[in-house]
Image 1 (cartoon, rainbow, N blue to C red):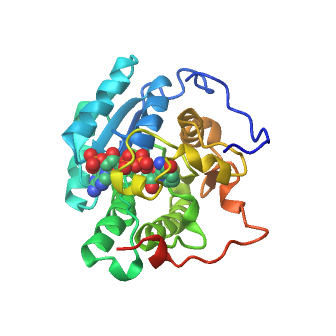
Image 2: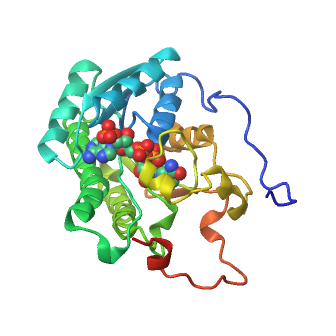
Length: 290
Ligand code: NAP
């Protein structure tokens, strides 16, 4: 049932970029996990602004699909295999991208894993997988990016993709919430350490952005579907993928040259929606039964 209020308006139609069409011409943008979902949406937005997009992830099927989607729109893209948890593999992936497309100018740390689970049932492997992808992976890629930018005395920009649960935790998602909070801290630390080197480090925290690639684990959490979330968000709608593309490209563009250590929350007010009359508390073990 839709609420009888207009909510926040829809953004302009179409995938037209809001920045000049050559904003990223001649630049290489690496998007970890860029073959699916939000990573692909952001990669497409960079490609429309002239970037060559390097999609780095584990699955050849994901990478190929992402590269094909960008090329189908006339964009430039390459795929490189990478498990971001492996520090040596991160160096190899940057070297491969450099050989095939040129040095990386922009890094988007988007790769993530997440599944709903009660903390007492979370296995050591599950904990390590999620924190390893999100926290270790973001740090390893950022470190390699910085080393290479320093070696060629080039400026650069890093964008870390967070979630809206960076404050206050996320019952049922202990692994992901802890890791994303840590990446927010990393964003702020690296922004200060690396500003003198010409490297900006920002974060983008998306709210609910439905897309076709959501894992079945995450869909299980939302049996009525992602669109049904709209009535729970102050904006009375979910996010549109093009809105995420506009935000990511702006944050990494020369038009944001003075912006670093910032976290942009793009969620239609969802994060600030504290209930006036709070519902009866439902323990996570009742929400996530065996
Ligand atoms: P998704 O479709 O599940 O994409 C995750 C991507 O990460 C996949 O392409 C996957 O590719 C890659 N990946 C996973 N493990 C990896 C590893 N070890 N090494 C390299 N790549 C790896 O998720 P999404 O919904 O698009 O989310 C993208 C980002 O937005 C995530 O950081 C997520 O936390 C954040 N976010 C999403 C929403 C939303 O509403 N969708 C809301 C808030 C935040 P491979 O399987 O090929 O490795």
